[in-house]
Image (tube, rainbow, N blue to C red; front, side, top):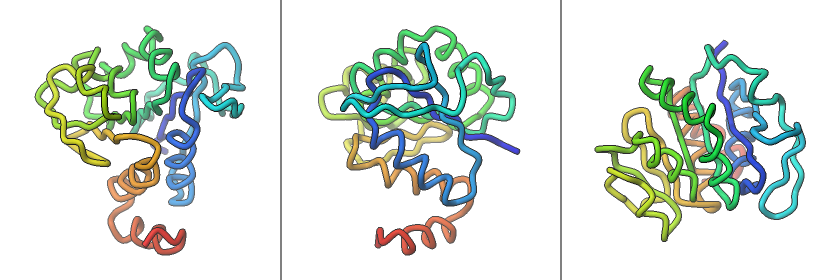
Length: 182
């Protein structure tokens, strides 16, 4: 079964991580929250501890269908500093795996050169970190196998975009209606 991986670093934005996870799991997708920190319990930017499903080194990622980076600070910069994650993102993006980042986290993709020639969005003020990208200022921007979103208010929309991509528009619409997002 294909797997959606969500990477949690100390200081991640809680809504940006958990809203898409919630939506994807409601759609029946297999989602693994991965700690890039020293422990399974990762503290969010607002002091909310979240228990990840696995440690980074415990996963082999061969079944990856999505690699998703929540933003927040210092979460995004902690993700950027994780060398093994950077190598994984470059490798899987080249294989056509969906790679996504929200809020400040597109800075990771920009730093790795993954946004070159792509349209992308991010939290206002971080546009300069998306090297090679055309900034859209949209809530969610999808360009090939790169999905980006602008911040906490776009977290649900990004989750529905994932569901639409992997499960179809009908499933996404069904979830939106059931969750009162119409």
